[in-house]
Length: 319
Image 1 (cartoon, rainbow, N blue to C red):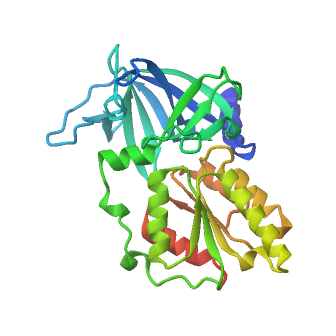
Image 2: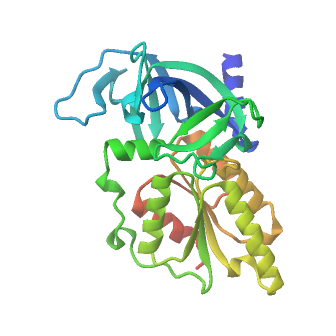
Image 3: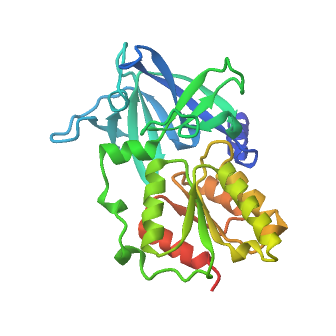
């Protein structure tokens, strides 16, 4: 029991070191290249890994739905992940990955699970930045460091997958949902960082509905670099950063630098004193919320409910 608890503590404490663990799995032969590629999902999203149980098909469901499974009293939808990404399993669908994601629980059927690897976020490149952009992939992980011979794994965009398979009306952003427009200090913006195309689109809709000027970037490193550039320009004008940036809104899981590290960097730098930071993430649970508090974030909101995000933004902005 002591060893298990130590492993849990070590895994949780990775968030303070810009590291994370990636579950690697295979989905079968890619229809375009004819090869079996590695895919990955952050271990924090995985509730459990289960040998393929009995699945009950549901009439009238979408093309990628296999049905539902009864797992310890909870009925969970099961999605055919190989068919979603365009792969054909060679040995069948043998395992389900039960995931907790953005207030929902669902299972993804896969062909095989390969390994869990511990990586630094610096080993992960944005799929868009690296020219490998695909609608269902947020980033590319270099598994053996940053060498040319490093094995690669595609980190799936679960947000995009779920939105594609079952579009949610609950994600609709309207001015009625978000309420009155924000009253930002004149000349300031909201700096927002998220590596998911779907999440960025929803955040942009929200900020537009709130009539809030914003800049959107794709990683914590981009946000940190942009903040430093703004700070340098503000200093040259004899102004504070808070005369240019009203707040930072950041995801947690991002290539190169995660949201925990970005938040810690901001809160430990005197130049950014008084700059509110809100973490907006699909990673929920008390462990992550404890870490949010430990790095000094001013707010934490789970993705994606327009009203909750607007309420949190209003709460942390200077009045």
